[in-house]
Amino acid sequence: MKAFDNLLSKAVHGDSRMRERGDVAPPIHVTTTRTHSKDPEHLHAHNSHDAPPDDDVYSREGHPNCKRVEATLSELLGGHCVAYSSGLSAYNALLLLKTPKRLFIGDGYFGIQAVARISQRSGLEIHPLEKIEELAENGDFVHVESLVNPTAIAPNIRSFAKRAHDKGAILVVDATFAPPPLQAPFELGADIIIHSASKYLGGHSDVLAGVLVTKSEKEAYALLEDRASIGTIIPPLTSWLLLRSLKTYPLRIKQQSANVNAIVKFLSDNQSKLSKLTNVYHSNLQSDQFVASQLPHGGSPTFSIEVTDEQTAKEVPSNLKLFYHVTSLGDVHSTIEWRAAIDENAKRNLLRLSIGIEDTDELIADLKQALE
Ligand SMILES: *Cc1c(COP(=O)(O)O)cnc(C)c1O
Image (tube, rainbow, N blue to C red; front, side, top):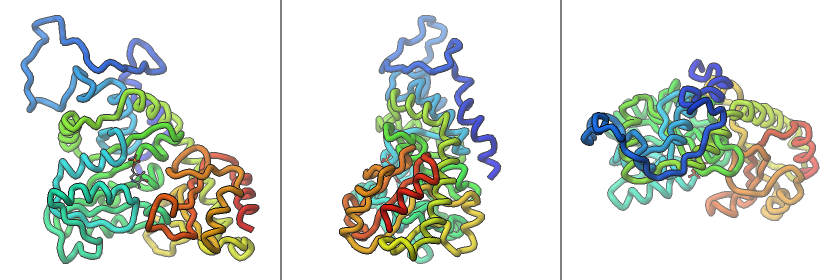
């Protein structure tokens, strides 16, 4: 995964060229509007074909904090990044830009499906992934979540890319659960990548943001132009917080990844001794051959377990000491959720865990006492 070489340096220096007057910590630019040039020679008539909205004349179109966070995101995610006010507004922007006739989509985060249903009102057809061969046409979307919420099972991205491309369709990969360096969707054939930056990239439960990653600059420009009109730009303070978070992102994901690899191994090795535990879902436990090359460092820090019954599932979160019982994921704190509280399709005995950066042994000991 060459795209992710030197991630630690990229995270810290991705926006260095945009530093203003020697500032080390970036200022927060809250102004919504900025003065035009005083020099008449520098005043040009607007030409929308020139370039994307620029110059930060009005903050719906662009602002310095957004530019800095996008510069760092582009380094980290290995493409041209456009940042939005949420993961779902990023996805909506993509649907608006490409206006696919059909969307092929399987299991995954219910919010993405809710956005797609809004486009259904203006004619979008939604089909299961099994129908790609039968129904897909040029310009349609094949949407794959990797890894899949809530089980963190890996879909074969390379195989979906082939199935989509054979029909002229576009492969969109929601990589929120396995951000860099865990997997490289472009290298596996994805055409566009989406991340909810509210999760691992933000990492502190204080940022709501989303990002689209494109292969071509032209496509990113088109998204920027649309974003200026639909008004879903990432706000200044959120940009600043996200930029700050990204500086330590590679360190965080490394520890989260090491933790989850150890925890999943412990739970699956000791399932017979943990009386409340009946099932562990994680791509590290998947036998399919493609998994090792798609996820060379191991799978997502988010995964799911099943316990004996609904009552136990409601009790386990309160019996844990290091885990917060919350929705969302990707935080430096470990979190757990009785998923049925938020997702009506979730099994009643399922718990979703997102592993933080705490000490591995302490997390394992905590889970052990809560599950035996
Ligand atoms: C959270 C999430 C989203 C939506 O992101 P928001 O930032 O909450 O809008 C999209 N996809 C996946 C897989 C998610 O987990």
